[in-house]
Amino acid sequence: MIWVIKITAVVSVLIYLLKLFGILPYISHFLEPVMNFVGLPGEASLAYVSGYFVNVYSAIAAAVTLNLSARSMTILAIMVLCSHNMIVETAVQKKTGSSALRIVLTRTLSGILLGFILSRLWPAEPQAFTGEVVEEHITLAESFMPWLLSLLKLCLKMAVLILLLSILQQIINEFGVMKKLTAALRWPLKFFGLGEDTSFLWIVANTLGLAYGAAVMFQEKEKGNISERDIQLLNTHISISHSNLEDLLLFVSVGGVWWIILLIRWACSLILVWEERLEFYIRDRFY
Image (cartoon, rainbow, N blue to C red; front, top):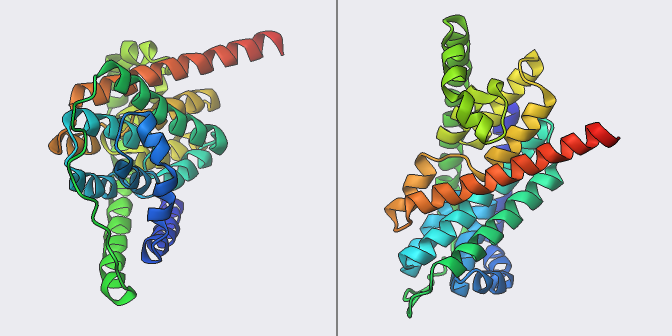
């Protein structure tokens, strides 16, 4: 639990400094061609960069100033949900045994590719952007206390949730609930290419998010309750499709189409997991 909070705090400090010194807008400027590639206005790059380095809340805060259409907001939502909070979530997935480079490339490229595919399947409207970008100029005195309070609340929330998850996990193991969960999710997980032992972790990642799921996953790995290969496959799946409750509803509240956001990421996760299973098969068979 402590290592997750440490990672979150360090990254939060770095992002705060990037915002304070006005570096994030410069980073987003270089991504305007990528936004145009996926059928979004260049101004959407700031929302994407904010989500990539920080979280969904910061991405939405930037996106709502742009008055994006349902199409544009849905594309942006897919890209952000594939690759938000990249530094923290990559760090926690690496802690469970996955390759950090593979996770970053998979999440980043998948988000861009899915955005491109949807932009071609869903014709663009005549006016995709009618908003105005508002640049914030903040000083250290104005921003430090709100940022510090926000960080403390986040760390406290993470500590409480991870502790409660650990307790819940012990309870469901003690009373045999895990067997029922495993039985109920056996076929859906098999369809996604995942092992039966990942049922609880899959639920946690899809409801509460990747960081919390990875924290519990690390505990399961230490206890020997889940194999290294199952962890790899689950990490691949949840790297693209996780936090499908709160984060998904947040984007729906600002105009995104929920079933497109959910299904296209599930489809991508399914393809990636089965591709990785093919890698394992080839490795076992020929090496």
